[in-house]
Amino acid sequence: TYGYCVLAEALTPAQLAAVRARIEEQIEAERAQGIERRAVQHYDQVNQWVTMLINKGAVFAELAENPKALALVGHVLGKEFLLSVLEAHFVRKGGSLMSLHCDQWWLAFPTAADSRYARVGDVTRSTVQTGPAERARGPVWPPAVVNVMYMVTDFTEENGGTRIVPGSHLSGWQPDQAVPHPFETAAAEGPAGSAVVFEGRTWHAAGVNRTDQHRIGITATYCGPMFRQLTNFPVGTQAEVIERASPGLRALLGLKVWSTYGGIDDH
Figure 1 (cartoon, rainbow, N blue to C red):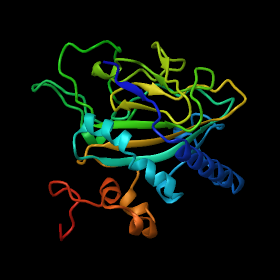
Figure 2: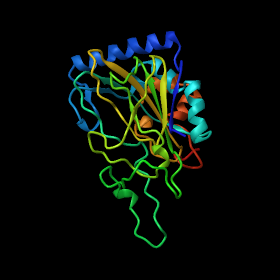
Figure 3: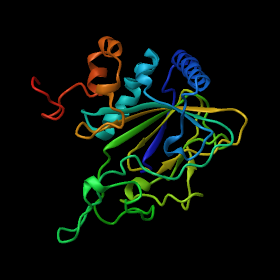
């Protein structure tokens, strides 16, 4: 109905404490060394992204395999899926409002059989077709992505909890990326330890933190097994992480063949 939900108690108190301690340590270490990554597409110079968490603590690998979250991911995507990205968003006061977007923007828009089509290799965020958030009258693509945003700190309206356009997943369109947002949005709110879970067609954006306290979210994004992952885990994951990974985690990272896709010589 809405394209998203809030999962209460996604993390145990012990998990939450361990995750928060480790991510805050990593955030400060990257900032101190001058290697911090700014928000995606550099839409502001205040907020900070911490990427490739799979290499930055065993507690993050636990998030990737969280059974509570994976049950919801499987409900949307089916029994086979990949981990697409695992990263943290550190949102400080003074950051900018992110433009609305959806996470499977790269799926080419359906076209009539006798019309020109959008070439998949030419698709960019600036060339996707935008439209209203109203429910489509015709066919729309099914979800191919699910995003699990763990609330490491409380998410509120005031501190910029992720903005969602409820029901937008059934529109069949991409959102206008103007700022301020041209559509009504709702803040995904919840106490630390919760998670907001939204599927890949749902329009969303990081909000503006108007408080003096930082907000931390950790995103675990999953995609269908036939799609390219946002993070190149097979190349970038450290060897020692793979060695100690469970078979399930190795499969999520893409070290598994799906219907001949991802094969080399020996399946």
